[in-house]
Image: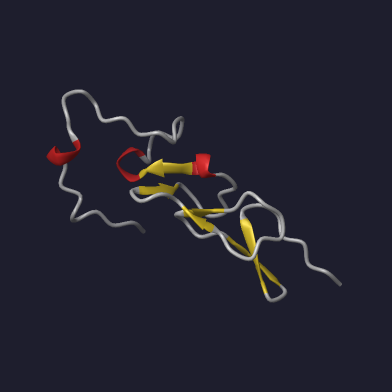
Length: 86
């Protein structure tokens, strides 16, 4: 019996596995999940589109996958060396 994996999953041998946080897959029966661009992650596992990737500083604003720095802050003003994801 053939295994069919939905988008948001990848096929490994005969097992469908959900894409991990920070990855996505928009196709059926893919053999891997794509990584979000550098500095971006997904809110949850099983993301199905690059549009599900959100900037980690802006991860609580789910309305937009494009992060824009507020005018009063520039990227150099933010220390991201101690950020971690759980």
